Image (cartoon, rainbow, N blue to C red; front, side, top):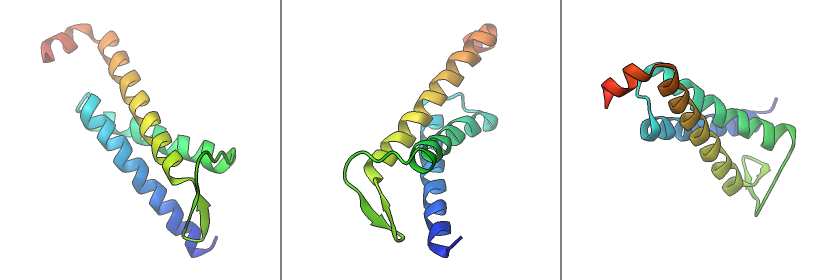
Length: 104
């Protein structure tokens, strides 16, 4: 794998970390273990739609020598992370209703 591919992978890992961390911070629950799911969802969406299915919506730009639909990828990562955080929050409240009510 060329160095440019590693650079692009690192960029998308950073995008997934920021999108997942932001979704976790806004939606909660604010426990360290809850941070993993939104980050994994953001990276998984980027990997699935951008790499495996090669979906590209909107304008593209050259990033590290690759054509990337950056706006589409950023929106995709944010939406996937937000949905994962929301589902995680709802599931956590339904599984432990007494504990969720005590935190409010």
